[in-house]
Length: 110
Length: 112
Image (cartoon, rainbow over all chains, first blue to last red; front, top):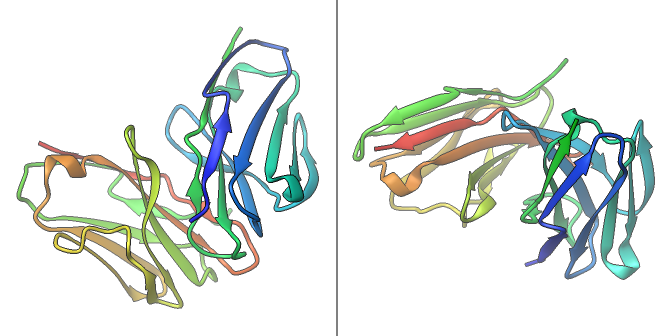
């Protein structure tokens, strides 16, 4: 099955800083998703982005499927951005079991 | 605001007891997934259903775990007998063919 690797494993920021999280995957993908797990454990959908670029407020994501990576950008970070960010993919199928990366733990200090 | 619901949110039980977790998928979603999250293994798929039929349960220990969808509005995950190594957060997610997966709040299980 597909392998999903995320970097960095941990990231500590001051409020207002920008950051880039990376997700590498081992094979071609038809489905790539980013999630935020908040400190209460809830998994929140951020982006469904098998290719191209999307933006939602201070967050944006880019997936370069041909080079097998995806980037999540967080601008002007806030303390509420803290938590764990996961990328996940169903691999070559567009639908079905998600394989998750190990996550990036983001801590934003005031 | 449609969302996946799970009950119970927390469960503490003793080793050997039966545990049943329930999930109500978002109305209209035809696929339901069960994932488990632990510190050691991260998030991993246990089983999933499409149109109530089981499609993949390869991630589930067959001797003690069972998953069913009695109807389109209810999915269950049962552990019998439970063991301390089953302690984890169990997430249910639902989706459709052309959409992302939406996760419920999870059931935090502790087996003593």
